[in-house]
Image (tube, rainbow, N blue to C red; front, side, top):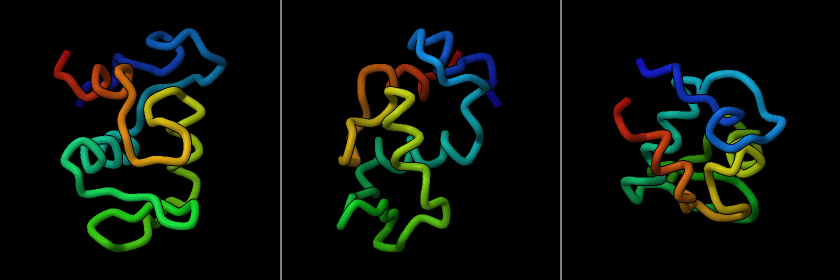
Length: 82
């Protein structure tokens, strides 16, 4: 697990703490094209995400484009091995 990358150190935002394994899994699903946004909700493999706040949290951290299931450049960097 690469918990050394945090949104606050990568982005210089007010979001703090390491990228959780759950958030990393969501980012990986987005990168693999397995995620979509429908009516403001995140679906992974056609099912609603159990974490209803993941989309907003990851967008606020600058890892996803707001309102979409697309990684930002920073989100892509977070997924790369350290």
